[in-house]
Length: 162
Image 1 (tube, rainbow, N blue to C red):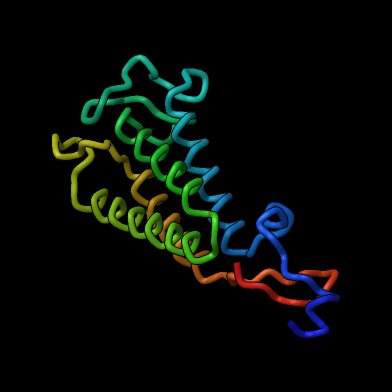
Image 2: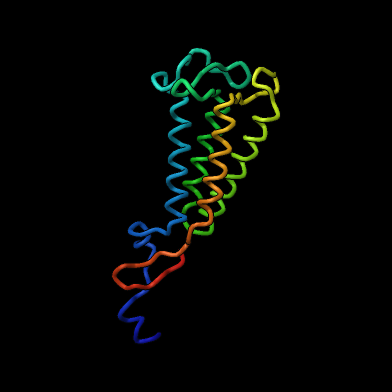
């Protein structure tokens, strides 16, 4: 052990809640966003045409009156948010979460482009606003995955990879 290590002891697991790397913060906020959207789809006040909420095709429920949702669509958002809770314990897994969530959003964007909104194959269902929102989400999530995994401690001036 170096003399300098006595002055700057390594941080422990208990210190994790105090400071997080930028990539972990980005993943946490992204996960909270998906949880909020998933739960919003099950609340009548936030979802118009709530009585028409179906498992998949045929659902005419609209979160905030803009985004078409179904039970399956809401469950996908909740699963994405839940996966975040499990994966933000380290920078590496948070980065993986952002890339997987961004990849899934890219797949949903392509699905929305290829499947007509009135088609029976539109089992989520997605409208045009959903489709283009998934493109934006894919770009943002994949971009956030490039954030640093290092935490700079203001008191010590040392960087630590989480």
